[in-house]
Length: 183
Image (cartoon, rainbow, N blue to C red; front, top):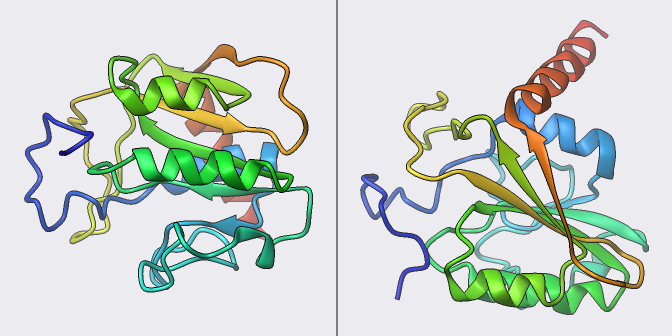
C-alpha cells in the first residue's frame, strides 16, 4: 500500500523527484552530510551515495561515513516506512539522518518516526518545488507540505518539534550555492 497519496505524477516517475539544490545546500551547512542514502549517479547530492541497485535498506551506512556523522535521505514516497526503520536502526550506530518527507502526521510511518527521531522540523510558509526527474526543472504545485525528520547521532532524550520557514531556508541555500559557484 502506498504511503503517499494525492500525487498526479505518473507512477513510473513518482519516486524519482529530486531535492532542490538550495534546500540541500542550506541543510548541508548545518549537518555536513557525508552520504546521500538514496540516489543515482546523476542526482547524488553527496560524493558518497547509495544507489537503488545497492539497496540502502540492506547496505550498512557505517561503511560509507565517518562516525558520528549525518546522512541525507529523500526516500521514495511510495513506501516511506522501511526508510524510517532503516534510519532508526542506523542511528544506533551513531549515524544521524535528515529525511525529507511529506508533512502528514496521520500516517503510520510518522508515528514510528517520532518514536525514534530527535527532531521533527516542519517546513512552513509554502511547499517545496521538487525537481522534475524528466526536465530537471523545479515544479510548483506539490500537493502536501514537507517535514524534516532528524535523527541526531547522539543519545536521544525526546523528540522535539520545530519549524523552519521555507523561503528563509531556500534563500540561505541559494546564497551558499552562489558563493560556491563564484569560488
